[in-house]
Image (cartoon, rainbow, N blue to C red):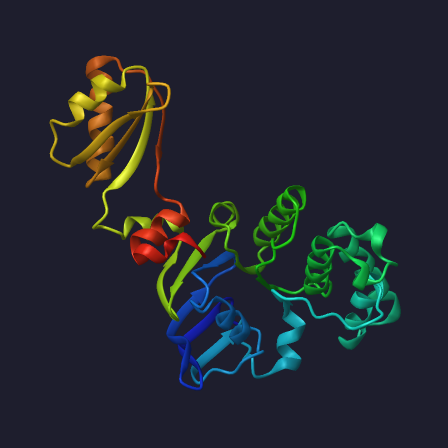
Length: 313
């Protein structure tokens, strides 16, 4: 099998309405987040790789398997939908157990996997309660449990943090990162951009059905060349640093912030700035506590690329 998920010039139209258009992607192992406003194509992309939709044009392979071959695909892929759809009358235990039996597993293996998935998602105590009586957060967790109960290599999660309380969100994020570190392919969509930053090994930015950027967020940020990079420096004498910085033409702006020890600057040449900072430290004895990019998060990059649409994802 191939070790990546690939889209080759994939388009999907709903009649005359565009879902995604001419998408070419390679998704490696780890956590990949899909970012874009409503209608940008996130769910369409997930449904295409999960075999729930067929492309109008183009080719998709998930670790070498075509989504048009569901018998093979479902053995390696787990899917958590954004919206609930549960068979009536099932307990949490029976909901998971029943789908594992569909995979052809033995009674003993289904039981063991069901109990392991319930424990992993914190639902052991609710195993014998009907799913219809679950809270929204519990329903979200049982969907996650169902997605990973058969131990898939690829996990597709459409808005998986919806309805979770802060503690459950933190636990889910830790779980996604753990799966990525284990070498799984975890594809996540989320509208909470600061959580996308915490989760992601790489991101795919979408707008109106097109992929506008992909890769590690720092790499994507470095390609936005028409926007000066923002850097936050915390030091003992920010006014001294600011005065020295303005002697170089690559510095666009510098502002002292917060408690008077933070200097937020914008530069057209980050590499030159870092060299200059080293010289200033040597020349003036400046004491620097920290230096960090201030705009290499998903929200900033999306707004640079898309403009007014960047406020939601």
